Length: 246
Image (cartoon, rainbow, N blue to C red):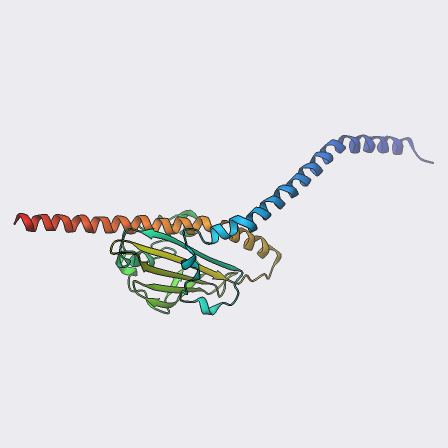
């Protein structure tokens, strides 16, 4: 025979399930709309935003131009070319590139994330100006970039040695516009290595949000180089005035 306790328990369970129905219904509605929003975002991202952010600041000729390291990867899944115009000659920009790195001059980006909270340098650090092919540029405590190619004041190529970006290249180019202006071009090319389900999330995050760090880096170099070049011009003007006065 079925005891009274069984009927009491069943009744309580029915009431509990009944109370849960509105909550479950709301969860399902939120889930449905979440899928719709995600779908719209992905369509907009791949149709418009991805190409725009992968070529931020660059013209068609910048994207089509060969840069050192391009020959190392065939058909990369991640291929970006970004550029910024700087009011400074190449030799005033190059030192800011040479000293980049974790716990060196920083990456001129989000220092709390990529430089252990140490502010990126606002001055040229002479101890890091002897960069040469084969040197390691640290990106963190356990990973870094190897200098693969270098032509001072013109171009440079770094290659990632470890992690999901293993084998990816980061190239820099300095192209004179006129006597006072230079275009700084940054190119990142990578073939994604998916070895774990979490790598998919990491790849998606990088593909969407890497532009934030790169844009901040390029603008950080621009600000520093233009300030440095401006100080040099001001000093030249002062010396010239003194010479004329003399």
